[in-house]
Amino acid sequence: MKILLIGNGGREHAIAWKMALSTIVDKIYCAPGNGGTHLENKCVNVNLDTIDELLNFAKEEKIDLTFVGPEAKLVEGIVDVFKENGLKIFGPSKAAAELEGSKAFAKEFMKKHGVKTAAYEVFDRVEEALDYTEKCPYPIVIKADGLAAGKGVVICGTAEEAQNTLKDFMVNDVFKGSGKKVVMEEFLDGVEASILSVTDGNVIVPFISAKDHKQIFDEDKGPNTGGMGAIVPNPYCTENVLKEFEETMLKPTLSGIKEEHMDYCGIIFFGLMITKKGTYLLEYNVRMGDPETQAVLPLLESDFTEIILAAIDGKLKDVEIKWKKGGACCVVLASKGYPGSYETGKAIDIKAAESKVFAAGAKYEDDTLKTSGGRVMSIVSTGDTLEEAIKNAYADIKNVNFEGMYFRKDIGTLYR
Ligand code: AMP
Ligand code: GLY
Image (tube, rainbow, N blue to C red; front, side, top):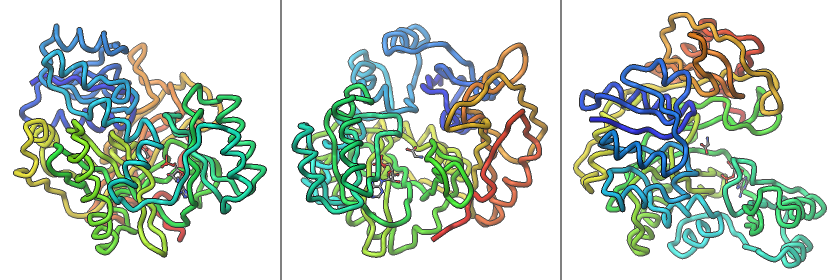
């Protein structure tokens, strides 16, 4: 079968790699893909961007299955358009993608269906939001309602900070519309977990738990990034936490999807906060996490493409998703200066490595791989235990090199 895979990150390289291992997959068109997917088995990069371009390509090439990596196209409604045109696509409808596209919508959904989450208020008038800063508890978490490329959440310690954030979001409109409405939410002190899951609208099947490391520097210091590494499974996801997740998040979410008649066949990612007083749902994402996916898929024993096809047929309950024993670790190799400004165009030298090397901000040009983004590559290793996976990943970093290469030395270290 022929697959169209949309996206250009490390997540998409990992998905392309895993799909290429499937005996039922002949060819994967990566739109636009990156330097890693260019070199990947069965993969061809195609330079397509808009929904119209993707739709025309899928029709002309008689694509059997389209997989959407990032959230933006899902929120834009690509699934509805492809389905109206009789094409097979995996992902939530535009209406269901609002679970990620609008934080206010997601919180209302959680509240209505009894999903355990932090207390919150929604404001679309700046005067009312500013009034609330006079009486809300601190720290308070302010979230832009719409998509903001991971930058739309600010934890404010004081009223002054909250007021400045609200002015930036709602008056100065730094997120071009996305921050005109805000969610102001109770601060939860704890550790995070990412539970990627797959749903066909009848059941939600969780994948193995993951933990990402968001901060740029060791010891979880410095500004947040798109993610500097990930480990699987998440050591904080004990049996009790997973049971609480299933009862207070997964089950009510599934009931909500059914009650609201949401057309949801795709990935649903639960972002959890595990605190001393229990576990809460911070957010839904309607796509796979990055870098989590890069560490999750190497541990998946089952055929990923077959899982997706079963979900599209509404037969997920008949599928057993098998995981390899042990753990996985992903260490991101970034350009010096990221998440601030950085240089690109540096040649990347890769020697044969035991680990999987996934590309993100790397392009193939003049027969060489060159850096083209902040997070350039990842080294991903598995092991019989998580500790071994971490050791294997770090042992293999010497096989990749480019000028200004930076990585965290402590992926997998737990600080609390
Ligand atoms: P979100 O996009 O809602 O997941 O928020 C992005 C990040 O902000 C999360 O991964 C957390 O690190 C942090 N965050 C969000 N909501 C809260 C909260 N209620 N309490 C503490 N931290 C939060
Ligand atoms: N790593 C978090 C995310 O993909 O949103």
